[in-house]
Length: 138
Ligand SMILES: [Zn+2]
Image 1: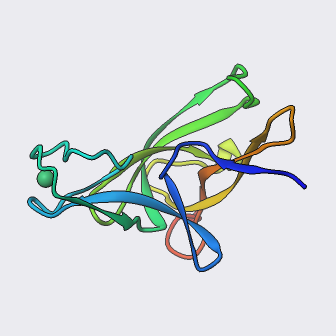
Image 2 (image 1 turned 90 degrees about the vertical axis):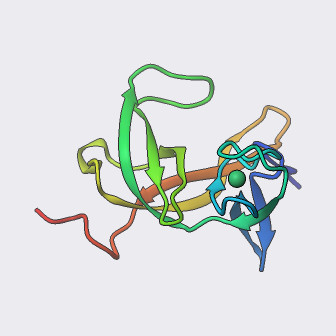
């Protein structure tokens, strides 16, 4: 039986049998941020609460790494995703590079990022193109 571990404690939480990406929302200024640090980066308030993040966002920008990084094989697409709640976060984009465009809709997925030598599966999040809305216009 393989063991599983989340790549960053608290980044994902299990809800209803699936993993959900969790950010923090500030009770004072109302802004949401990720990763979920305990001090609001906008107003320094400590009045923050965990909230699930929107699963669909817009790709603000991205870059491509063409050499292996750790366990990731190139091309590695890293992007900044803007969520409807105003949060911009960094994530890996799993897609064919030719299909990746600034402004495209992407949705978060969770799953195994890599497997350690001892069989431990490391879980995390990544983004994939979202066919449902926009994008795809040729
Ligand atoms: Zn705040």
